[in-house]
Structures are given as C-alpha cells and as structure tokens.
Length: 154
Image (cartoon, rainbow, N blue to C red; front, side):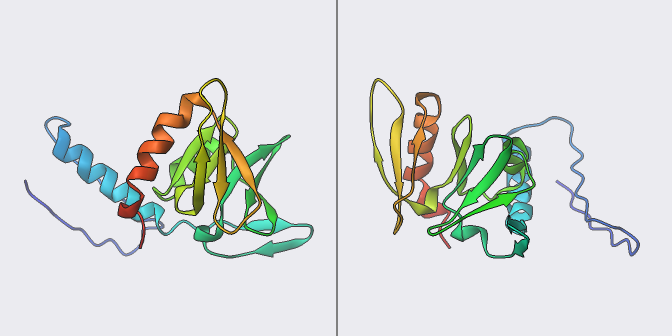
C-alpha cells in the first residue's frame, strides 16, 4: 500500500481520497477511522430563545425530534439545533447512536436500560431525570454499543 500526502495551500476544506483496486476490510477500516477522526471535531451551535450556546457534545444526553424541530437535551435543559437527525448521524462522534426513529442517544451518558420485551425499552441518563425510549428495532444496536462503550471513553 502506498501512502502519499499532498499539501495544497488554497483548499477550503481538507480532503482524503482513497484509491484502491477493491474495497476490502482494510480499506473499510481506514475509511471508518478517518470518518471517526473527522467527526470528533464536530461543532454544533445550540439555540435557546435569542441566544446561541457553544458547549461540548459530551454534555448532550440525547437528540430528539419534537414537531418539526430537533432538540439537544442536556442534564438541565433543551436546546434547538439546525440539523436533521439523519444529518446528525453522519457528523456525530461514534458515542452517539440511534435509539428510535426520533431519537439519538449519547451512550456515554446512559445510566440504565429497562428492558420491555413487548414494547419500547426505557433509557435513563446519568444525573438526570430525563429519559427516552429505545424502540425494539434499535435495541440490539444500542445494547451492542453500550457493551463497547469503554472503547469510546476518553
């Protein structure tokens, strides 16, 4: 495998190009790693009334759709953001995962999951009264990510 770095002074945004004869496990791992590294620098502006807030994504417990807006919930508050959930899935760090059609949770903030075999399971968060439901469709993925979460912690 050859690796080459070109420095171009007038670029607006860094670009990584992978040229390969076929996509195998190694190429997929490299691709995932690059995406993970670039998403760790994700900056989101949070809005409440007429103020803009800037704080680390680690403080977000979960993102949730309410009507036509998306809200980021922290321990004590909720802030509107200007992204759709599918956009967030692409840009958020790997410690965020979908829990329902309308919810993305920060697995580093999950305190407990109360399993319900016939309906949605209840997710509770560290140091917060807030809770969300994980649908049966996303439950297995959430459990897997929770079991791997020591890999995501800094």
